[in-house]
Image (tube, rainbow, N blue to C red; front, side, top):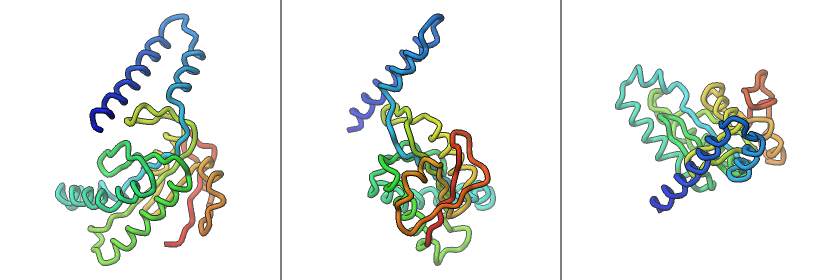
Length: 209
């Protein structure tokens, strides 16, 4: 399986690189190249970015072993939830995940399950041992390059929401996510004052822990 993944990803990356090189040649019809790229790699996904609240300050205060422990615990707790909701974990960078889901309902369900599991996990923990999660979600057409990366406006917006704007326990979403999720019971949305680049509007999901 690892060999197949390597072949698939490298083939996609090689094809994209060839098209990009063709695109930069003088006189090239960029619109036609762009159309080919979207035909090859354009897919619709819900993108999740996660971040751990206060993580950098915790590393500075408690040291690298505490960093490793928190990373390990977040993997142990959260990755099974991603798997059970049919998410694909594309990237892990430090304390952050980039995950894609085929539909918004499963992404939101996974987000709620993560936060609720962490509430239970944190109940008897000292403050420095708690795992506090921030989540951002976007949804729409993206360029998916093998199983290595995704690119697009909703990717950028989800990254900003999850890694920069969300606080502990918050699930922030783009307008595109909200439009797909209005029929989910027992949640509602509060508009944010500011939307990240790539999204017209953004919202906080209100939910019961």
